[in-house]
Image (cartoon, rainbow, N blue to C red; front, top):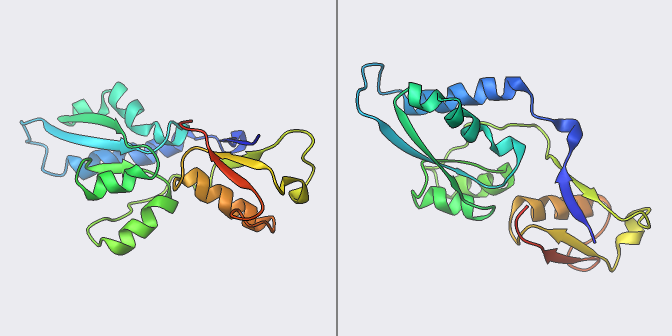
Length: 177
């Protein structure tokens, strides 16, 4: 059976947090320095992944509190993340562009502020007996859940290998990462 893992070669760098945390703080502290009332925000994240840990790090480091922001970090799980954002269940969400782009095209109130990486951080991992694309035919490809970024990445990778995800393999939803 296949599984997808974080590509260790694309580790999150310190500069990543140095850019993202100030952007998050700026977005929600823009009412001015004289703000005395604590502002509450809900930040959604779509996966338990290093790239999605920025809100936790910022909260634990006290960055939000220093700016008078009470941040609640909410797991919105994969394909649910854009729906939670559109329904105003969260104020902002960290998710894959695969999930965000279709939503922002349909809902002009939703904008994508930026991205964490130019590349997807997911890779196919196979048993040693799988030597090439042809060996994948008829096999099971494990994904997290239907419609999430892992499935979209798997479909993209299979297409790149010349395979049809609907005909050549069986997608099996395995649950959370």
